[in-house]
Length: 404
Image (tube, helix red, strand yellow):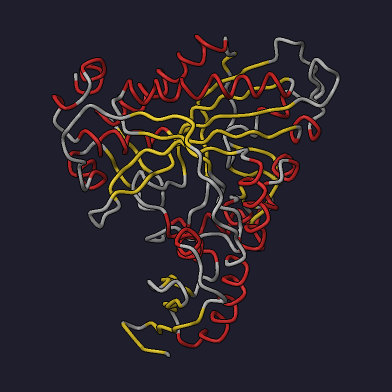
């Protein structure tokens, strides 16, 4: 059935099978990467059918054909794996969760939203972001004797390829380009913008890509710096605050889902036992961090949001091998309900990076690696959601640091 509404066309389709609620949510969220002519997919409550909102009726056939291929791939995901809880914190604040936090940040002037998944912030938001990062960094330094690092926001495409990113998440990659080194082309670009009201971008043919990308995962830049190294039985732990970029298309929203954000990262490198031990010891530290800010939080089994055509197989592997956990902090979903927001992840890589980058453990085998990333802006959003804007609801130990 097709209906015209507001200049768009709505098309109802049957899904290839009845899908689980979590798969339905994935279908809706990732649908922004199906076609620029598709506004969204909404899966109906029966989980057997969906409604497509297509921006231009002239492209209906093309979009519907792509959507059928997309949902066929997404519907293959297996569900029903046991969700294990590896750590938990419960807040003592008995007040209600705060709604409209992103909007209130903007109203108070603490956040400026540029509208494309980038934000600027100051005041209590900035102070809390710094405090989350500092507290996490201090815990890692105390318990793991971490080395401190710093890495650039750009990363070579060859490194991302080696890390498998283009196979798993090609939709979220961002490539860096510059105007080609040609006098006439540069002058044409300059003249076009010398008296224009808005920016006039260069022609596609005049953009040169030199193989650099914006870094989409905090841990990736660390591995090339470890290439060819061998670590003794003490292993190696490295921590830093990383700048991360993931293209979210129309999913970008407030501090919930940003194109550009900050991650407190820690990477463990060594034998399988070393990395497994560090992961085990790190989980209570995440709980301790949540308790510092008096937050409801759970660490649970999870999978990544892979691109549709590889989602089923890669999610199955992650779930079956239990190599990923998410740090889930409840917030409000905008409809009055509560949702668990992923505010970080704990990842076990096996020998993948050790083999790719020729990193050797003390046993002479390719090193195992693991990492933990904490999304700073999401921790900020979650904390203000759970405690609101009254300083007296915040834990005494951090109140003055944030609002002082």
